[in-house]
Image (cartoon, rainbow, N blue to C red; front, side, top):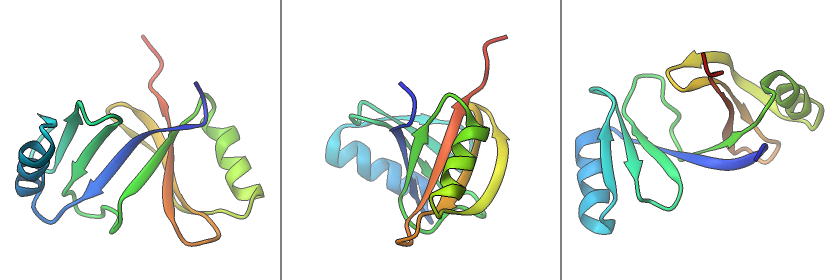
Length: 114
């Protein structure tokens, strides 16, 4: 399904403590992707805990799409402001934007299968 929220990222100043909290409080599984990022499992929606430099300061809802360029055009046309232009990451490609009410969000497309 395209254009649906399917991922959420929690910014953290201490990834290990945040992940331990989510595990203890809610029983969510944790998948480590290195020193700055953990994935969440069994949380009801895919998600992660981000400690990397340059992370957003608030929880980030991420929309999955089938066509990143078309989604960026729609975001701009609807009044959104691009805050981080398209970039590659291990799972695919994405960009960040701020909607007119001030919420920062992202749109992503999975990497094509080789």
